[in-house]
Length: 166
Image 1 (tube, rainbow, N blue to C red):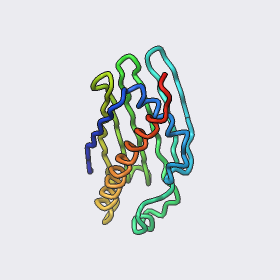
Image 2 (cartoon, helix red, strand yellow):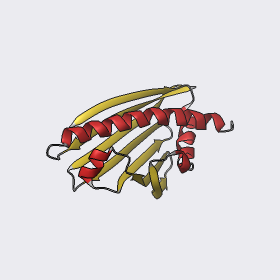
Image 3 (tube, one colour):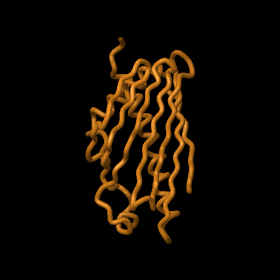
C-alpha cells in the first residue's frame, strides 16, 4: 500500500471554497479526464449537506498500464459531507478495480483557518494487488492524483474569483 498526504491553503473563506467546489461540477468541459458525472444522492439536514456522486473517468493512465489493465473507463464514487456549523467539508473518493485487486481512496478535510482563509488536507491511499505491476500502478495513481490536486487547487481559486459576492 502506498500513502501520501497533500495540503493546500486557500486565501478565501471556506463557504466561498464550498461554492467553488460545486461550480466545478457544472463545468465538465474543463475536466478532460471526466467522461460522465451523475449525482446519486443529495440530502440536506439541519446543519449538514451530503452529496454522493458517481464519476466515470476516461482512461488517462499510461499506455503500458492501460494495456495490462485492459480498461476503457474508470469509475469513482465520491462522497461529500458539508458540516455547515463546524465550517468543515469532508470528502471521500473511492475506486475499486478488478474485484478489489486495485483500491484507491482519497479522503479530504477542508476547514477554516481564519474568517478569510481555509485549508484542504488530503490523504491518498492506494493498494494494487497485481503481480509484477502492483507497485507501478500504485505509483502512477498517486503521482497522477498529486498532479491533479494541484490543478484542482488552481481551478477552485479561479472559480471562487468568478463568484459574485453575496
